[in-house]
Image (cartoon, rainbow, N blue to C red; front, side, top):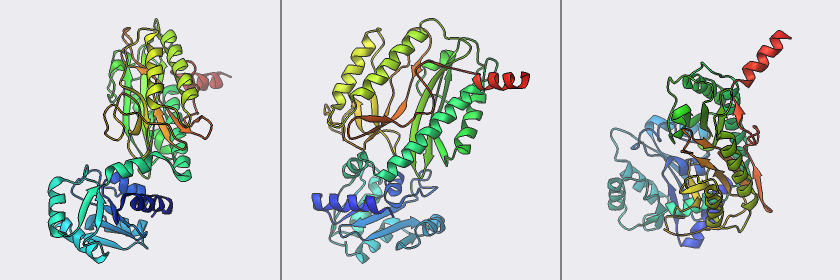
Amino acid sequence: MRAEIIEKQTAAMRENGLDAIISCSPENFAYVSGFVVPSQPLIRHRHAMAIVTADGTKALFGVDMEASTIRRKQPEVPTRIWAEFSDDPMVVLADQLNELGLGSARIAIEMDYLPAGDLMRLQAALPDARFAPAEGILARLRQIKTPGEIALLRKLSRIADQAIYDALASVDEGDSEMDIAGHLTRNVYSLGAEHFKLLIVATGERSVLPNVGPSDRVLKRGDVCRVEIFSVIDGYQAGVCRTAVVGQAPDHADDIWSHLVDCKYEIMDKVRPGASCRAIYDSFIAKLSQMNLPPISFVGHGIGLHLHEDPYLGLTPVLGKPGSDAPIEENMVLGFEPLCYDTGHGFGMQNKDMLLVTAKGSELLSDYSNTDRLIVCGQGRQQAQSRSIA
């Protein structure tokens, strides 16, 4: 179990008058334990939970199919295993909570993840306990990253950035989006990621589509290519997007890209402790309007165990409160993405990076490729050909 995270949770319990926090989503289980139970994100009823009490007592709860994985990862932590096809997991959990002295406690649990029927059965099995929502508390704790989280997100950012750049350097006119995806997925694994999420490959006329996977479309000279991937280790993820051209940029592409690069540096300059999330977003929208590019609802967001976490740099609510703003704080990690999906010229462009908030400003974590100019596909192949001729 992760000592820094448990310390943060016990402090939050003192602040909120709680006796225990139960983390039951795959993301928050990983936040406390340091690993993801492999089948939990895929099969919703396979509950895995991490229990932390106000005095720092730790316990785990998991399904029999994953017992060996949980015990191998956390052999020293008391664990209650429930049988998938013969137990009511909520009855087993209630018994475990009773043994931990929580039978009449005030317990925070993730009500936005645990199915309503399960929560009702847990309350019936533990009638003297009082349950409160944990999701807001956990979301707030996760906004401020620990040194270990920052180091991992820096590594993941560079993996995603290099994986995309090398994939684009390996393809050219006549190759397909599937070829890009093949290079990209191989690169992500070879660079050290455990797996990936949300692979986006959108080229030519498809580059205006926000979240599409690769197709058999063949690259043509003058295509704009948007490629994004989230590299993953221990449940943490870093999302990077790069835009490239095949051969040469189409009309207007260089000018629009230069404008989005200016947006990137303006955002980086404004991100610092105490800055207003909404003010940064408003300045971005004003910058977009200078080229009559359509607005989007946000330009950045927290990131870590979810693809999107609070706070948002945009119109979106902070911690579910409509119309709210939030200050930037030191040790937040943000995914920020100056973009325009539909430029009005038949292509979309996006430059998504990972940014750490430092004491005095910000640090770019996805710093492998130079995005000041559009990436040109096929550069790796051309260099290989030049070496073979030499």
